[in-house]
Image (tube, rainbow, N blue to C red):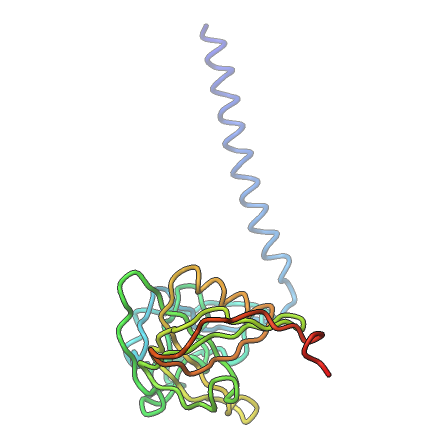
Length: 224
């Protein structure tokens, strides 16, 4: 019996040591994979931050991380002083790298409304002509049009705008704007899918807008 217990104990110990060795090897493999690559430090969000939060209040919500340059997103910030005097354009999510595009002057963020109970915030960045020439303001209602490979349809109607921020950065993106909306989970999935795999246009709606009769438009059908 004692020999059997010793054998079982030895087997458990070997298993633990083997697992520990595997973890150490895997960590070393990650380090070896990035050997010889240039690295840099950037700021990463550690907890959710609300829209229009001043950059001066973010010190406890971000951390400095060391990453390979290939993994750093364009416009990533290394210091909060780079956006001094600015506020967040939308909600910051834990794990995201902090970028200059997520900030704007308080005057450029036209404001926000509260998120209705049971809904969530979603921010999309679009060119001016895709958001009614930029003529949107918090409280407006919008329709979301989604296009995929020659087909266009209304994805969501009467979406409430929470905030609108003018584009920031170089001249190439200066005409863009970030629109933050309140959506339910299913609608959020539709919009994100369209942003990732198709194209999105927003239409300005009112409570009286006739949203009936919508259908999918095929470019092969309407083309002359």
